[in-house]
Image 1 (cartoon, each protein chain N blue to C red):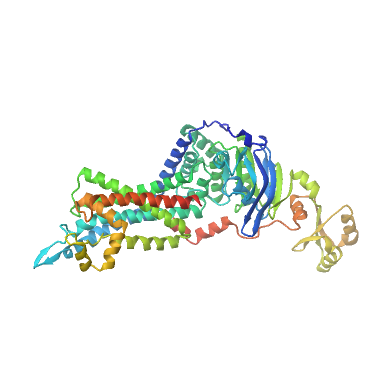
Image 2: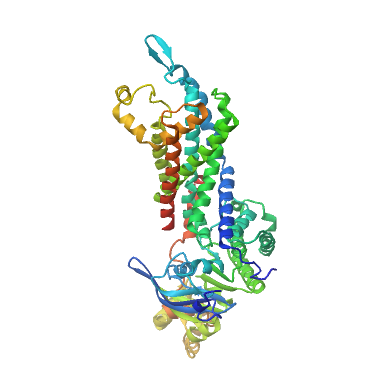
Length: 334
Length: 279
């Protein structure tokens, strides 16, 4: 392309350099810099409000950064937004299908809007429908699909044009565990078959275990960026989950090891462990426990030790709000 | 599986035109799948032409020295017939813009905003889609021409369709301008009615300003403020030009109407585009 000079390193499909974004008095992104490597599955992990979506919106040119630069396939999103958009396939957090059009019509429209020539458009639509297993639903109106199917359709849609990078904003929010697994299996298959780079945001920790690299973000800052294994060995903790036999035993453990306590669920206590802790615990309370579980480092504990708190939903997200609107009768206004 | 980059690069103009077609098609398909809109499009003209028109027909005359004459040389049905076309176009055009709010609130707009289409193309696709639907609804009224005792030649119909298209374009743009300023569906409904009905009633659509009277006489017969509003209402001239084509009756110079409509198209679309660029 003419703007080859723009691309600092062609091997990075996405390069973010010192990007800041402020909403009024809130600093949503604070000097964020990172690169996404070619063909990797890159996860942005953080709680709601961490700045993940803001970052994604900057990458897909909906928002402009206040300072810094973001490059998509070498194109600066502020200066060459159209070029950047042509290389991105985007699945937004909120559903963005036209409910009144059929599944196939939604894909057709996307193809037209992205200037995909007719023959290739037809061919890709059939391929993508088959890939996300929606061929049988092709002529059904999009509103009759379940939320998991809508997600799959949106993923298929993002790949109708020549997208080199797939951006997925919380693709599994609001879906049940089984559907979430399925969405992930599609994403991985797509990545392999289409040979593309995938960037995904999520606040479900268990989902990023299989990603190539994970970027942990909170309060608009990057806290850590590495492979899941490296993160675990650098920041992970061994946790011990014990179930005391009686309430006085429980109290005794809390009194004795209160400084190690990271959580309590029902009768079970979660304690931070180290090399000598399990031995010490067993020596003192060994006869007064009904269960003991040693948990090896997980990303959960990585997050905990980086931010000092657990990762979980804080408020209803936009998707749930949208759904609530539909339930209140929003459908009729269409 | 087709590999990436199998797509030959199309010229930017072709991409914009293809996208324009896609968005236009979407608007048209959407509106045909909305039964409410269709029912409105059919029931409104029937109500106005058959009930109001026939009901008021006998009263549409004046008495001068004991001799009963029609104020204008037409029956009331003939007189309001072109205005009902304008009304149907108006409702449909402005209502079709409600999809702007829908798209904005429910994400579809995002899908388009991250596409290679320019904002102008996106807006034009939407407005042309709304225009098409509105002209179709306007044409539904034309079918009632026989009941209103309006005889039409083929060229009359063509001319009328041209005027209707321009009028629908201007009004859909107006709808988008309103929609861009309103945050909720409820607000849009109230606001659009607050714009549509007054505009319609004061456009000399349901009563004539007697052309036999001089300007001074008109102001004696009708209250001053009403004459002023009617004269300043752009829709007056649009309805007048439609009357010129359909029943050969003009209250103003024949070219005024088309000029006003074209200016309205340009101005309203420009405002809509200005707003749309800032989303």
